[in-house]
Image (tube, rainbow, N blue to C red):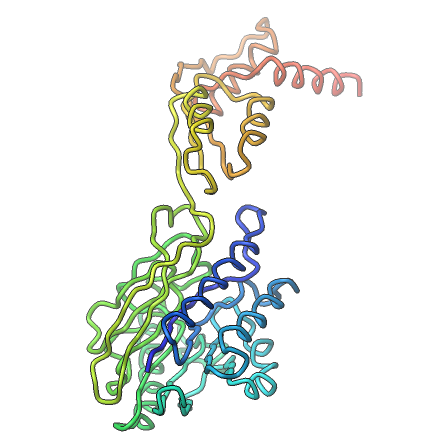
Length: 386
């Protein structure tokens, strides 16, 4: 049996207000090609299909179209669980009609194992699928005291009990897979995982996984990675796109598991190529930025630009950069010269000089443009008139 493990699509997510929907469409197209090329029997989506509990209509449309295509319109099984960004009730609302097309949608935590006969491999798959298990979604108060260490212990104990219950339903003559959306102690994180209880109360030990699971498919962390200290293979597939500049340079992928009953699985990381990469530039002045743009450096990427300057960039310079290349997300000046600014105030010092000193102090040495100074003087004049 060949299983594709993916997670953290975050459909509807933007990058500083810039839509990523076309990129998300492209990466889903790539996944559809992969499941066909690699003869995938089952697709597992381990949570965070959406970026918010109330996603835009275009994101929902893309989600259901993706499930239809990945399932080959009912010929291939797809199992989806809710992540912390998903609305559990909203996700599971479509379960009755989805089940008719070999798609399983699970919103709320459960210890019931999904039994799926997979005709393409003539084998049975047992999926211990646990949607994001927060206290609220478990509908339990795990600790009355506001003690993080106590809550962490109680939470880990509760998750271990759920997995132990699932373990009882696993079968020797079937493929046994556990799946969840949670943070396992020791995982490497990045800035785009929000909100997330990293290192806090909602942390699970790898020892809590069900003992009979042949593989544990995880979602929550955006960097593809294996779970350390787990007895069985356990892995975060990571997000298919980079969603923050802390992920600059990460390779994005899906995970393919080739597994049979009672056998150790063969695990393959399948790299993805679609979507615009996130790249950081550090330039020594405007001339270097213009040269890189002319050379076509990182064409097609989203850029976080830090540029060395001696005085603040004018609005015209910023607009010109964005006009030359629409991929600039951040343009941040790094002021090279920091002059000492006196804190002594003299009544006979011109107000524009005082403003210039204040500006330099606030920007770490940047000098205001003539346009900014004149705007300040205009505001002062208007205030005096009033």
